[in-house]
Length: 451
Image (cartoon, rainbow, N blue to C red; front, side):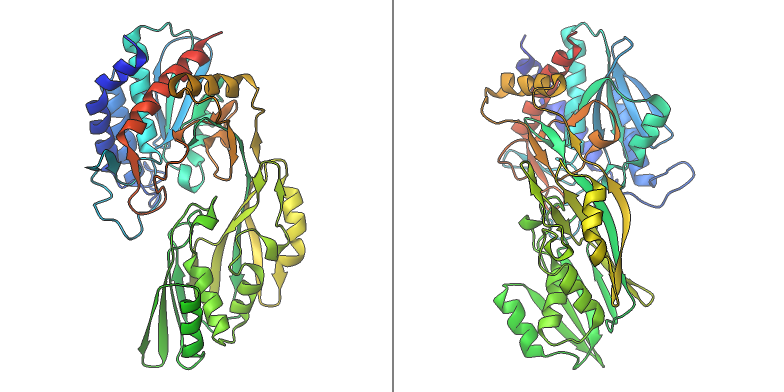
């Protein structure tokens, strides 16, 4: 029996397992003694390990940071790295994000694409390898983390406990593979020089903000000019007055921070609208002169690119902490550059009299040549299943587990041309795509097993 037929036989189990994992709100929560990322991710991890026990795999829980399921024997480890945590759901869902919904050949729910669907597809791939009686001369290990969306401390804990892998992939990118991931710089813009009474926007630093609410004093700006700005830029908003204040509620469009041009940033439009309306405020001036509506870092002097892509910048979250306005900055920079180079160019723009930009995190890029053994073997698996010999591995701005462990690239789970609305409302995945993932992962592991 061919791999494809094995896959089809597991269609219903795949959907049942995925519905189980989707039912858990595994957004990172308050850390507890036995739950480093909160009870939601812990519960989801336990459910995933229970499924793997049911499938007959050897399993291990690493202190509720992460866990793994394993088949095979040998000194070398082939790793498949997926994550069970999710980003916050936000607004705009037409069905319950924690109750998987099947409509028109697709599954809907938070995590069906990023990354619970790929985790379940990988489980089924391991089961098919057992069913086929494939000689497992290496250990094949499905590693499931609980903190990929907000720091990957889960993977760092795995490496500390178990070491690196000898080869493998994380099904958390695109087919036919991601041979380069941009470097990442996280920063926090802060200022006390503001007349803004309150401001709140965004759900995560790596998501384009789709709603921002800002409160300012009445008569501190021109209502006509504010309306003109929003009308001219086709931005939806509402404005309500209460005693001596005005609350402006601005709507945007979510997108992943690695592709901010696909979204509409409600924070940027809220602050640029206030400036256009004559709101005289040092922080607003600071924001509009350092970020504004740009998403290429031009205002910070880092509008850079190489043969594999361009730098992107996103302000995902803004809030007021006491008398200080704080705004997150997420920068993804080209794979042939280094963090020192980017920060050096930014330094003269990091501080002025109206605010500061404080660097809070940095990660160097990841890059493997397309003809390297790892990339070429995974590419051949994709080609064998899809018969697509034209699409080549790519580089991307999204960061995956591959940056935190040796000998790994992102491989799947999305196919070219699909829009699964990851990090957005109504996240989805075609059932046929999930089944094709299983087939590709199965054959990919078989090729990695070859000496």
